[in-house]
Amino acid sequence: MTQDTMKAVRIHAFGGPEVLRYEDAPVPTLKPGEVLVRVQAVAVNPPDWYLRDGYRSLPAEWRPALDLPVIPGTDVSGVVAAVAADVTTLAVGDEVFGMVKFPSFGESAAYAEYVAAPATDLARKPAGVDHSQTAGVAMAGLTAWQFLIELGHDAPNPLQPGRHHPVPLRGKAVLVNGAGGGVGHLAVQLAKRQGAQVTAVASGKHEPFLRELGVDRFIDYQRTPPEDIARDLDLVVDTLVGPTTARFLRTLKRGGALFPIYPLGFDGGNEAARLGVTVSATQVRSSGAQLETLGRLIAEGSLRVAIDSTFALKDARAAHERAARGGIQGKIILAVA
Image 1: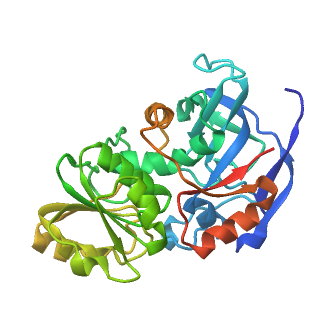
Image 2 (image 1 turned 45 degrees about the horizontal axis):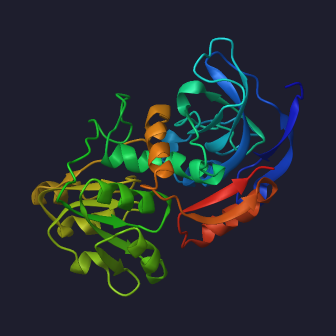
Image 3 (image 1 turned 90 degrees about the vertical axis):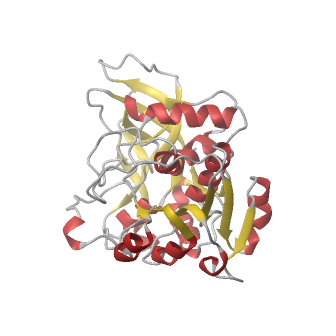
C-alpha cells in the first residue's frame, strides 16, 4: 500500500452530530504489534458520542485532555492491508474484526477507511459472515460476554474496588433491561445459551424481535414499570445509561446480583447491602480471543447480530442523529466503500 491519505470522519470541536466532518486525513502509521486494516464496516457505540461531546457525561476528574482533530469509533471489520514486522499471527488479505484500542481516549480512530489495530485486538472474520455483523458484535458482544460469561483479563477495575465476577446462569431467572439494544439483544441470547430463564424489558415494538430470540417473558416498560411486577430474580442486567438502576434492587432475591452496564450515578449501595444483593460492573476491554468465540457463534447461527440501520461513512452525522432518537434495535453500522 502506497497512499498516504484516506477519508475519515474527524472532530475539530466538541458538540452535537454536526461537528462530525468527513474529510481527508493521514493514513495511520503502524507501531510494533499492529496491523493496518482496510475498513469495510464500523459499528456506532455510545463511547463515540461521549467522545464527540468532549466526555461531558463523565465526572470532571475522569475527562481526558484530547488533541484535536480526533477520529471517533472503536469497532471495525475489514481486510488486513499491511502488518508490522513483528506480527506473525495475521497476514495481508486476512479478513478481521475487532474493538480497537479500547478502553482509550481518542486513540481507536475507527471512523475511517484505514485503522491501525493491535493484532491482539482482532479476530479472523468467519467466512460467509457479513462485515456489518462482525463490526456490530465487537463492543456490544464483548460487553455482554465480559459481564455475563468470562471477564478474561486482570486489569484494574476503574468502576469499583474489586474485580467483577460473572455469576452462574443455568436455571437462573435473569432480567435484561434495554433488551432490544446493542448490548441487550446479545446479552439476552448469551444468557439463554447458558440456560437462563430470561425476561426482556423493552418498548412494545421490540417484542416480536425479542420473542424470536427466545425470551421467556417480555415486559413493555411503556405499559408497566418492570420493577413493579418482576420478582425473585437472580440477576438483573441493566444496559441503559443513567442513575435509575437502583429501582431493580427490589426485584432481586437475597443473594442475587445487579449488573449495571453503565454504573456511574448509581446510589443504591446501602439498599443493596441491606437486601443482600451484589452490585457489580466492569470496564469492557479489547480481546481478539473472545471475539474469535463470538465470531464462531455467529457463523454457526447461535448468535444473531441485529442491524438497526446502515449509513455511509460520510453520513456519520445522520447515524449519530439516528442514535439520539433512541429505540434502536440492535446496532447502527457505517459502511465504508
